[in-house]
Image (cartoon, one colour):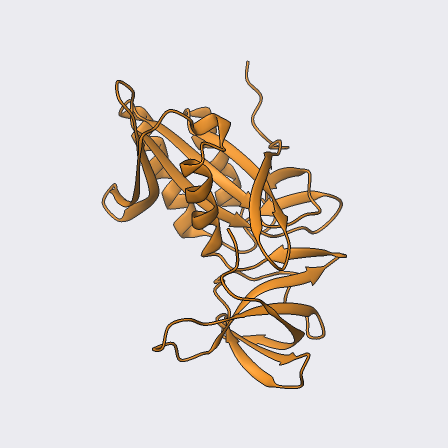
Length: 238
């Protein structure tokens, strides 16, 4: 995924009301950017951090900038939670995700259960449909471990239960974590911040939901899915 226009660098002065970020750009302009991230952004919203913002395209946008990247621990972190679906869509179209090959049709935002929509429903001839839910992961608290979620995530837990129901009906289901960091080499559910979600993820995996975690290469020009990372606290198989 290429950024459509050059990003502007600046310094974060405040992130507030979840969706607003005040930034002073390198040219001295003070702007308020849309922060497309409903999470806590732990470790990524400290005033003084170097950030990059993109200019908004839509003429109806109230805010002319979007927060895209944060420099943390010497590397770049993607904080725009809209991008993981785009990254996965590009990789599916390019047959770049080995575990998800062989599906000719990639449907977006398909109804799943009574109250949910799944990010992708993959369909192929003579094979069961694959329900694919994508989550953005940008939390790193120590070492090289990526964690999800960074706050309580009741909606994400519901998605896991819906994926499990699809497996029980005979379809395939995948929970896909896009790790928008360059400094992690394994993944775990963050039970300290949401023990319910951590338990639900293990329950879903035990029921047959597949868990895939992919790292990204990140620059101020583009973000790319690269390689699969191991799930550190995956339930053991007997």
